[in-house]
Image 1 (spheres, rainbow, N blue to C red):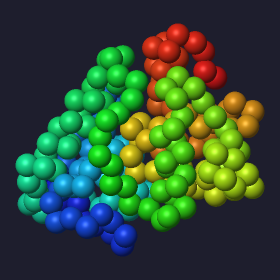
Image 2 (cartoon, rainbow, N blue to C red):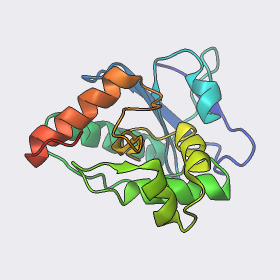
Image 3 (tube, helix red, strand yellow):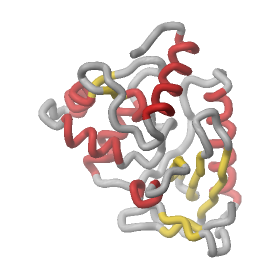
Image 4 (tube, rainbow, N blue to C red):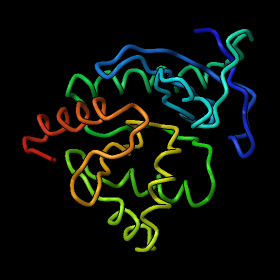
Length: 187
């Protein structure tokens, strides 16, 4: 895919981007990186670019450099290893676009162990604000770096598979995949 992401307000400061589309067991994913790190893992769903604030201009010439290309290539390799069951965590620089609250919520997501789930309420408690479950859910809904920043590991208080940009079937697949690797049932 030849595209140039257009940075939105509060996007990472960079003029160099690299974009790569990869096939996965949960559908086609578009990886976006700047020289600072991975900016997005986009689902093929309509509205996905608006959800994350990453706008891809398909008609523009791609602007890239070796740093951004190296990061997007590393992300593609690590995602392939994850899907093959060879990786349970990611070692990538990340450059998500979001508010301070969203970024704090996403940091909590990165601390959820592979093969486990927590509720939105538990995520809010870990964030230090036990009354912010709805705000945490909204922040997770804006997570631009799906799978790598594992919002799929957050479920409803009753264990239900709620809200996921890739859809409930993809969320179920990711949780079942991690369960099979971790050796226990999650939800």
